[in-house]
Image 1: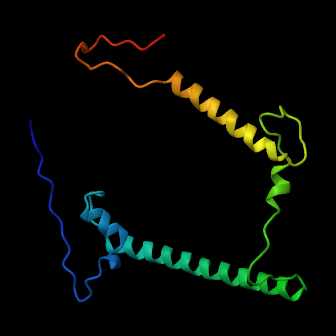
Image 2 (image 1 turned 90 degrees about the vertical axis):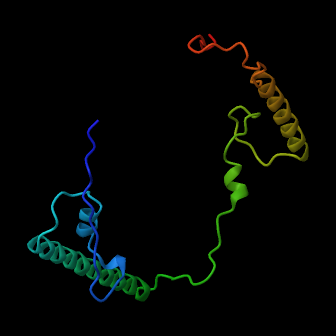
Image 3 (image 1 turned 135 degrees about the vertical axis):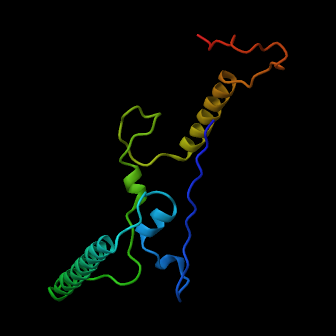
Length: 150
């Protein structure tokens, strides 16, 4: 077996020793994710692209602030603080329960909760008996002979 020694790469900081200040391209080279170190021309091009993105972000933020300011002066109410949420009970009543079989109805009565819990317990018991834990000790197992149940 032929092993290849990986080239060791490291950085010597001049002044600032903050690892987050290293450009991504250099980190990729240090980690061996790129074969050639970034050239000064490539770094200048990438920095110019990053600056353009920063300017676009600043422009979009400014446009968003102006849009919000216009909406606020038009008389559209801007809520401050807590906002009331939807009425969840009326929302839930729109959907049929499993026992109703597709019929949309009003609020359920007090006995429905008891019936639902009894149905859930019976369903859980059915599932428990359907899927039981293995009972074998493994003493008779032979590799390559197991077949899934049909």
